[in-house]
Image (cartoon, rainbow, N blue to C red):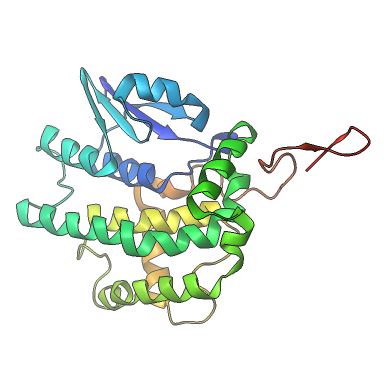
Length: 255
């Protein structure tokens, strides 16, 4: 739609690497909106600061209005386009969606982040890898590889977080009920992040997640297979992994 500009994080060869941007991609499709897209690398931080006085994406421009934060953008779309399909199904649904949004960010998201960090860097543009490595290693106080080395603890935490989702999806096709809504997009964004960010299956083997897998397949197929329009995990891990080169005794850089 004319007047809407969507700034979203991109990685290697145009991969869509942000779970928060995926929420809004689905929200826009739900509303039948087709904004102009501004692909945004970590290196584009000055443009983002100038536009929104902060550093994070996604961002939505709607004329003179600039909205950042995925939840704020979803609410803006709901209020701005009330004649289009609702993301929340009313005020009560919006309140419930806010709870699930916060639950996803604080319970579902963190174990997946630990699981995929070391793999995820290869999804980034090579020019962004150094910044990503430095900033995330400062947050965790360890290398990306060390942070992702222990898989058992985050896998257990993720499996525990998935239990109420699986029980819900045993009874209905979507988390919102018979049709998808923003609560589905919020949760699916974490699964989509893992699909793109690691070659590993965060759901693990076996049939204990059959309902979740079926729901994930339904989500992937929505809006003309929206989730598969961009690249998945890259098969090539060549080039810099973001570590700073240091000088060897013979003067040649080593990593």
